[in-house]
Image 1 (cartoon, rainbow over the protein chains, first blue to last red):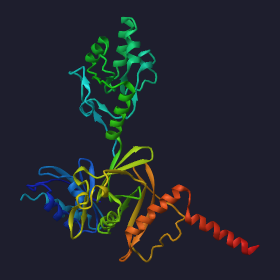
Image 2: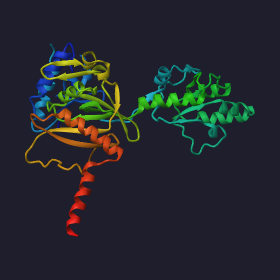
Image 3: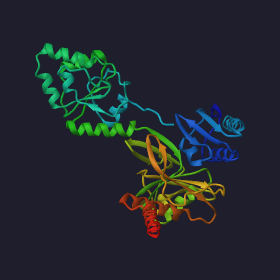
Image 4: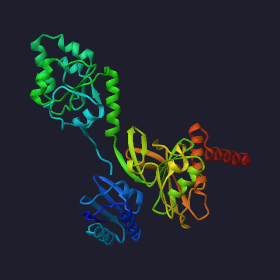
Length: 85
Length: 312
């Protein structure tokens, strides 16, 4: 299992489009991936789940994955949300 | 994912619009139990099993009992009653004013004294309903919750297996959508789970290729529900030739969500299989079983009789 806490640096937070890209990226991995915010955990491969968390700029989330490509998935997704653009 | 929850007294005051008699009290005290106590016995001096961690509700009985004592005794009882640090707050019902001795002692201890104009039993039920809502253990599940013939069915399965498409087909067939993709499930009482959509996602459904749709504006108010008791789980999984799927329906699988076990069915998915019909029939079969008719068992019984008949 891989896990990483990360602060979301994306200027808009995970608005609809960035959320869709995030979920698209998550779906490229075979691991089970979860995103947790304020004790609520959702499936990272579900766009509705991710959007239900309403993740904003500067908020801290935990990305957790379990499976063969868990490390890679967590690193990739964490890098994605911590980009400042 | 579930957690023991609690709310602060400040949230209770705001949520129910209670009067505050002790503005300087500690409103960060936490309420972690749904139970309410009417402290008649505690005020009479019996404190052995006093559930101090509950909200203490004073009605006309308790107040008249307290004010009927002589002042020394009253001070003594109030002192003992207010001495518990774990008591979140005291609520005085019927719009009555709290006795001065109680106010004085509570202020010294920073114990919040609140008031409501409701009669005591009504106040008790309103408070416990509010607490149940806010304190019930809760979890978020990746799945779709639909109401099919009045049965709340939670459809689970991995991403892209066709949960939302099944829900869409069900809605087209006149059933109701509760939540798509993310379902908040609450344990409202023993053996009762209630599912809702996260507030942001209410009535929304996401279909690959179409995007986010609003089931209420598309299909009307009759096509959605805000919440529904979850009665069974249907798990969709990709068809595998090496797995033996249930052919009889005699064994009942169970799945545990929070503290409740729900009957569960695993349905293998293969292109061309009409999942909505299968879910519909599963709902009807569940109702039949609840009414006392179990097709698989009845059939087994008949088969047994037929075999025994031949041997005679």
